[in-house]
Image 1 (tube, rainbow, N blue to C red):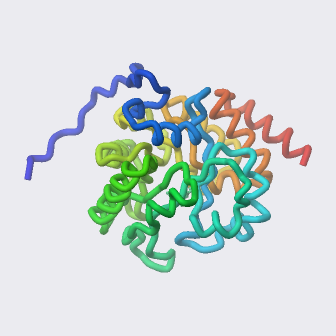
Image 2 (image 1 turned 60 degrees about the horizontal axis):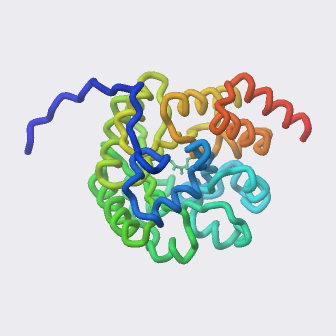
Image 3 (image 1 turned 180 degrees about the vertical axis):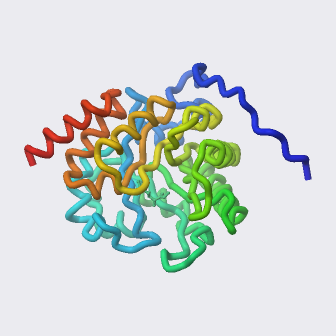
Length: 292
Ligand code: 5RP
């Protein structure tokens, strides 16, 4: 067992990692199919994405705002860059004529009724993701959780299958109830996920040091939304995340639990793709909301 080393400090946040010949960090040496799928999710013009996360039912059932996905989410599809959902919802509710890229939740197991959520398994075959014309798959990784090793192993098996088919894997940093959410934790979790092969990482925003989380992760990071916040706060968080190096967002509750989800996703889009400042984006939100 090697002796534990001190964490480094030289993040050189002002010096972006090069990706010669491709626009996405850490993706320039991937195969064509993998790059093409990434290009469906991350807009080649801005290099960023607004993913809409609606996979919550995979462990907590009909979450507020997702009781009727046909009514609340299908109308939002034109406004997102990609949808993050389960294969069950994809097959049963999402119209097959929708050409938006679909990223499929590929892990599952314990429900919200259990104390320990890290006891997950791979919940989907890569062949099925290909059959569903997915643009990627996503899986929770519980660094520091009771089933840390299993969740890492789930991800590495998925990455191996993804490499066989050209399917990018999004590793999601899943934070247990008792874990500290700070930059040090997310640097560790994101870096481990990237080192073990995920093509991009979904993680939470932290107010201090988020730029060191993105700088020390060699692949793109998308920001997870987390619990519902007031709209201006959520727009500020998304703005800060992309300004501090995130390649976009994968937000759920802060969009579909908003009092005006269509207005909110448009405002998030402006922040992510057009660098609109939070106050201006909030004006966009209010104006679209008032138009109903
Ligand atoms: C947790 C997940 C979720 O299932 C979901 O995507 C979270 O979205 P949000 O927190 O924005 O509602 O991946 O990490």
